[in-house]
Image (cartoon, rainbow, N blue to C red; front, side, top):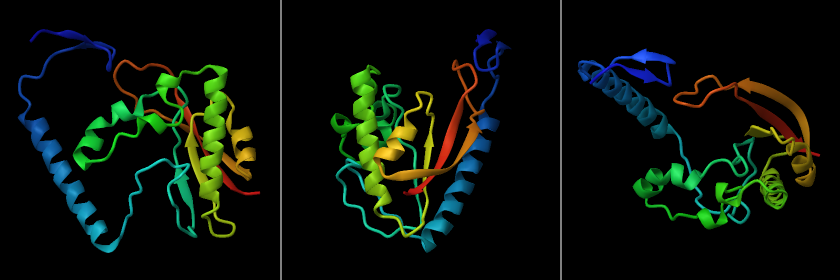
Length: 185
């Protein structure tokens, strides 16, 4: 009800007097996105595999694989996305999560992460058509991925650095991630 210090905008903000125009805009945007999705869905098929990526059956050959592995010891992904598991009726598989935040970032946890992600990428690369790329979106601040790619039998063709500038709330500082383009060695 009173002006407050806003961490997102880094200034004093005032509460809005009315929200109906925001709700209307968001509702119209949501409807437009649902209609666009319905048009795409009518002509495409998607298969969702819910399981441990080290074990789930993968078919192929695929023209490409795009993945964004978890960051080791950083985010509790299952808790962050619990609403989706509940809405979709999916089992909570946090006991097999690779790089779980609860596992920490000690050397043993990082080694286990590297081994597991290497295994996942090796399995994924085995589903690729000849010469097809495997794209990995990752923040490799620990420099783990050269070794992980080698473990997986992959060679790095290109690395694209991407500035993540849509951060909100109290998170501060520059943030970058890489898009790695790899192929079977």
